[in-house]
Image (cartoon, rainbow, N blue to C red; front, side, top):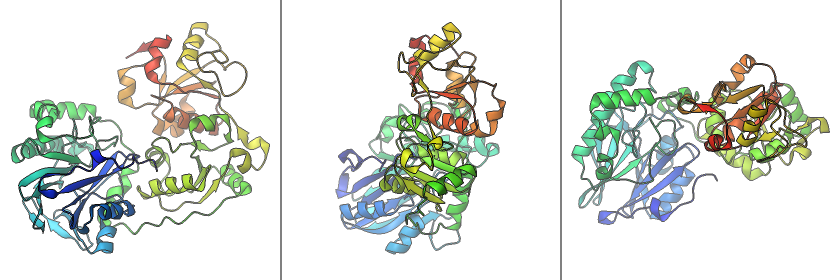
Length: 487
């Protein structure tokens, strides 16, 4: 699994004998939580694959008595409803959301006595959404921490534009007030347990750190250190695009998601794969980009499991389009299937395992992509011609690299605005397919921040018939390599 293994740092033991275990979903940048007194457990913001939650509760030695949602999630399908059905636990959601399934309606100030040693206090913290709730965890000695969902994050807050840009300024003002409300309500030593902020696009800006307290955030978080108008201005200015699949998550969560089905997809043989590729269907290669550029089936898209595959695939694919997965092993396919199910992509058209050579219907299907570094790009810019055949990194094929007619930057708008290659064409990865026809003719050298997104873009461009070179290098190396930059 791509999710980080359990660590002691992610299972703090708190005052009064309480324990909180973190369930991290690194592919989406989110966390779920299980809090227990050793006999009864509370689960906050569970992901859809609830087997991880049940295992965590088992490790902590408590039956699950309460499941809570801080808000209607926009970046994943919740497992809360199914978890409550399986365990008989109460399912708590904001009373203002009023979903159609059985639930406990929770309002600001409600207190839930889970056990004599574990209590939950609900606090209205609008900002990320209008009906957002945070949950204060209280033991026998008082409050020990707060589950903040998409409100107070580590060094930032949740973004405020997911309900529409026309609400973003109002919600940013609410967000500022909500964070201050938590600061006034809780002691400085209270732990903070956010759901978002670990790479999630639900975060208004990149989060900082792996753990924090109210007191630490008071001196570091803009919601505490800036006046309201400054915070609102900074928050709105920093908002960039978010994944297109978010449009489907809230609707599904408020209606009540169906149980998860992770049965293995239908096997596709080489002829079936060629038929799907010839038909223009999405066939995703889950191997690393380094393996992909050396050899792959023509028309496949590079989205390796070593990066945020689920985010970018969910962002770019037409919702409901047939999807086939290619992995080296059945375990890779199963891992990808689990990740995709978390965002509601449940039905795979097919899957296949093996090397490209084993999966090809004929040798003509096997393709490769030349690879360059920023050193190669600098040399090409200086000479006005080829980037050389291998200095500083080389290519996936023998011979010199073809000269760049277009340098394509597929990073986000904010990344491009900070610094970019002079005269580069900017098209974020999620727009590459629809805008490929806008690029000037000739060979496209494509880069991103580290190589992952560029590999995906290179595969899409190759699929569209363009000649492409992948710059598989960190953008931090560009200036030192001599690439002319501007901002």
